[in-house]
Length: 112
Length: 119
Image (cartoon, rainbow over all chains, first blue to last red; front, top):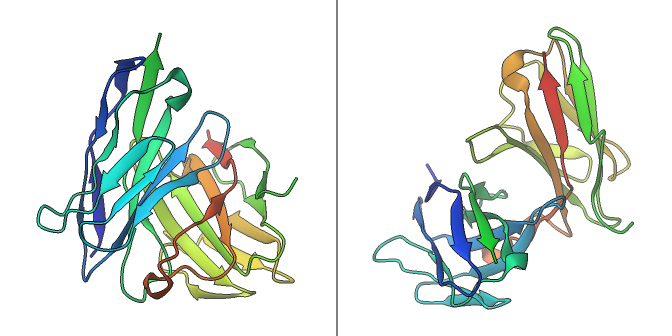
């Protein structure tokens, strides 16, 4: 079956630090990969996606590269801001499935 | 508003009672999903609606859980004879059409969730 594994949080960083949140997956077939973000008091929203190997998804300064050889989709940002404090979820979809499989989420806290 | 609306936002109930959770999707969205988020767990898929029918209800954990959707819009998730292990945040999401790999879609629009606490 499909599964997504994320690094456990919380991740606490100072503003302007470099961020990496690890995500690896197991999938039957060739998935599309996603990062969703949940800001405090809000619903999850799509942050970025990648649909084939070596694709790089990017949005709001965040990037993630689809690495088929390591079955990974790590989220990175060069300089985090306090406003990036949120919970980040890695997810995938495969084949004819009509649903996303999510990881457990990683909480990021950015301090001044 | 124009987003996915869920109610109640918080529900505390006693073990054995029935609860209903409501979801109002974005107008015009044909696909509707329910997920559950328990402490330390990922988002667990429960059920998917396309229109008023549920092609995939494989994630419902037991026959105490049921869901319906009427008018291709509002959905209700019902939990009968609640147990403490049902305590979680129940998330509803909608999308314009069913998400699938072929379309390279995958954007779901989520509500803020209904937090259920069973005492």
